[in-house]
Length: 432
Image (cartoon, rainbow, N blue to C red; front, side, top):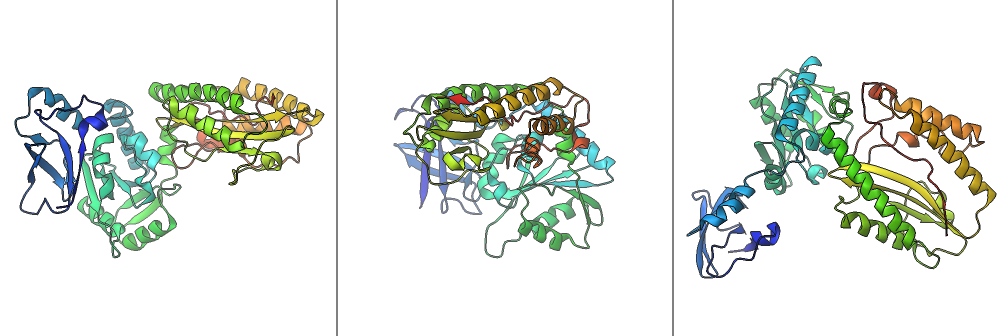
């Protein structure tokens, strides 16, 4: 028998179990379970333990150990309760609004592929979107159905409100699009119009091609036109609280990065200080690679490999995100070493004046397009019309793949009380 054992106390930070106490464990085995049995009994530390299984090779999170005492009940119950980023009521309200929106668009269902959409809608938190993964949302309010791979099964149960989870099995012949078609048939959606979420890293060209082949002539697929992104524009108090927490962590990390910046160190040492600071404060892993480009590479718009050692006369472009519970803020600024040129001082003055004007109008009811116009006009007036970032839409780059969201289109943000996002084209240069 091949198996591995994981004690719950190591994952849940519970007190260690003694040899004479019940030992709750995960058992992962390919041979213990068979189609005629849903239990596995084995000896461990001299005690007989019984396990229940959710599906072939995967333990159900409610398990039994013989002679389990009452003090173990909270442990078992805690494993049966999903850990949600928002209240069940907030998730339910979002789901109801989406179903209504899908119906108003003349569709019978929606195929959700974006991981950030699933998180906002149900709480489902995973990196499994890199494989075929789809949440089917019927417009009539029936419960959603998640189609995913087996490694995400327990995680889907533990992090979301989803109760109907279907598994597609990896193999050379696997075609999850056909499994999706079976779910849609079960819901009576043959010949119906179905919205599909297209603008997402969660739906590759290969997987879209498979979906189109599977459903061609069977139903009508239509572009969802950012249904969920539009619903997400107006933030709840809980979402704003997460964003403020991310901003607090970012502000603290700036001090750590500046303190680490000095001639003679690698620019990657600054990146290490950034990561240590934000992760030490409870932030998520960065949703995209940070930029710490020094020397001639400070004008690059993307990060590069091969760390460089900072010189006495130098500059470092710093741009990085901080996400807390997948709610993201971002900063961009420059650290200068040695003598500060007049050109740098002028750019700083123009940038600060422009940023002040943008901040003054960043209020509910203002579109991002209007804020961008102030940015562009400010650079024009300062003599930077031909600058590389003048008209590239940098200020509208608000979504950080794959978790974060945003769009620079005026019509998406012309709604009442959206939460203005902040992207600083310039922040003060620091003389060292």
